[in-house]
Image 1 (cartoon, rainbow, N blue to C red):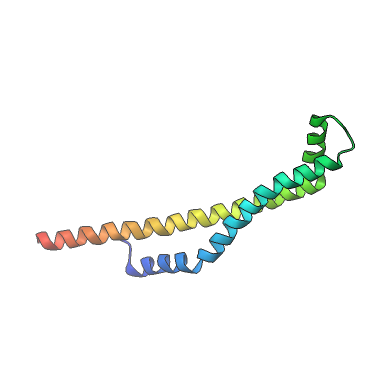
Image 2: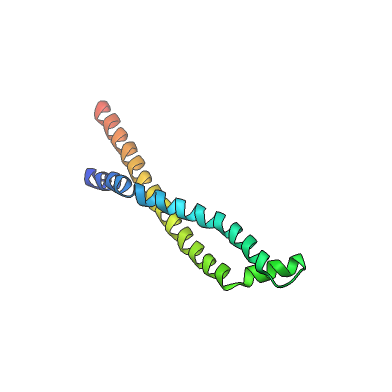
Length: 109
């Protein structure tokens, strides 16, 4: 059985972490989009002419690899928030169902 206190904690979590979750999503999108810009900038700096070689230069560049590390962190934080929010929402929904079932039983009895 899910207690009212547990539901209250789930609601508090959703309220208290909304801004952090939104910031995590914004960070992820920004880094994903910036990755394209950085690749283009690095391709322009490539000391080679062939397009494939320019891509290889960009993808192997330390700046690009550093960005990928940042993307990994951003994706982790965003996904962590998503799963914790989903868990809180599921708990609230289960409590609603539980409460509805209890009301239905009290009417029958």
